[in-house]
Image (cartoon, rainbow, N blue to C red):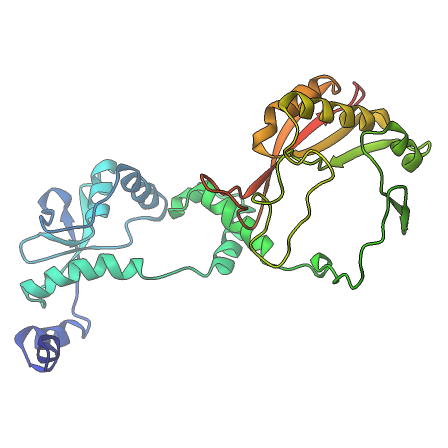
Length: 330
């Protein structure tokens, strides 16, 4: 029989006292904060940030969780609340005196009280719904009073929105070899898909005719080799691009981007907005090329993806989207 089993089976005084205490005889009593003694064996630490968070919670909701103390006014549980009360200048706080536990049981309970709460998890969907409902209300307090930072709350809400799959995201399997060749125009409902060289101005006029674009969303090659940078670990093995897949110098790639930017700007309305995807390695070339074409660098957006891509130092879970404006019209 192990020591733990013997302790569970052996009757003791504290166990009898526990039965009496659990019958509802615990009393909440107001005591001076200055009379309470911190437990030197308390292993739980509270940062200054957390103390202020607890203080803000007390101001908003009241002191609703009594501090547990022993017969000598030493704190068993509630050190953070006591420190918060000191910050707020509160002199009297509610306490519960615990007298039915032995000294050894109290030492174990101090650890259990702090640890058991950490073992609990969250249902992210329910939590996100609660924050969504609270966020639309005209609350007299900041939601950070819950202990969650604003960034954490935003992330919870964003991830909850991404949990719901869209059937339109399912791409049907391709059952035949690709048959598209340069010069082919595909009519997809009211849309056109043209297989051509983006460096050639005539390609755009053949696709657009007399129409002009209000918005352009472009994803030029990043002058980075596909192999070793994009996929490659699963069954899908993307092919290399026809060009700009690592073979160009900085000057050559800047000229490549300048040419394509000029072409799309040439078939765009005055005031059109262009969204240009690019990786972090070629921010410089993108901005240098854009200065030759666009009237304004409107913003830099970040596409937050579900999973990180390949990499060693940092695995990029994002893609940069540069936002430029053509001309001066609204």
